[in-house]
Length: 460
Image (cartoon, rainbow, N blue to C red):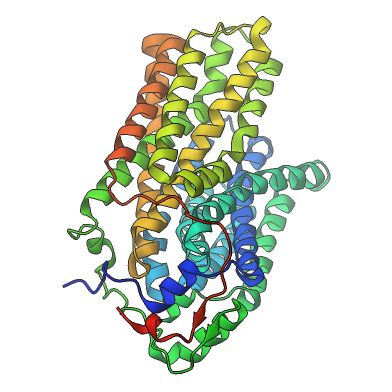
């Protein structure tokens, strides 16, 4: 029998949901955003090192597909395992220990003698990267008032591409003079130093702490830092944590089964849409006779659309997730229809760049919505598990994009390629609309000072 209670909101949970967004809570958001920088940094370091590894090991490009592929498999597995870990040992530990694993594996990558060892190391690095995501999203959600939660979760995801930028800067500074090993060693020490910093600076979620009455003193200290007035005798306990082995099963309890299945399907299609462009746009544009410079400019324009993540958060905050997701997914489908009929030639390069930028705003927004919706659907006891599972299914969509992209190009050229993305965007819309428990629009964005001294807070 599951211990997860999807019923009444606890006193503590309601207070956080309705309370003010204090400076301390915003600080937690910024700390978690730094963890997302590590996600983007580590993802990019291996890719930056591959040209140097090809020379050092005297190998062509093809053998390096294996470490990149197993790294993605590790991320998907880490999403699911890390979510369960966060519900068992806490969000804080679910962030710090994966960062330690990432740092150790980056250092091990620097010592790899061949592709086989590199692949093994990148598998475990992927596990750390995957485990980090659901716990970061969950910690942000559990420190943020409900009316600002969608924006906060989506905003934190914006820092993943910032990590890619940091990796590029590191590469430009280190690779020319010191080589790939020095780059990966630097990339390994950064997460380890960050983990040490988080050990002292990152607080645990009060919602997770409230599962154990022995944590009352720590919870009261956190609430004071969140500028909440507290009645010392008030019951602020949460429901018991899920028993061993029940985390994933609870996602399929009658209260969550439908939303779990449709959220997974939505994430799968949203990730496939994004990665079809990310993985196959260069080949598609090159096949139309566009040069390397034009292709690079077009993809640079695509990458600038990364601020779609906080935009979906603002849209959900204002209109609710149902209307926001409908707008973003239908806009993404319309954008690919325009790209389908737009002539792909050098004369239309500005139009192409503009459309790719606009399209990625909506596509990235849909990726962020997966986490926004997951952190809303599931209660605290299974929030990390639910968020990690949704992310893992999305990663499977990213892996499937390798086949969807190549076959759509083979069968229909650019028209078939963009038609594939139109179909996945429309499926994202359909699955999102089938979810029942959507984020409601915020009635007010005004911060409120909440007192936990009033008797009505202790009533069911």
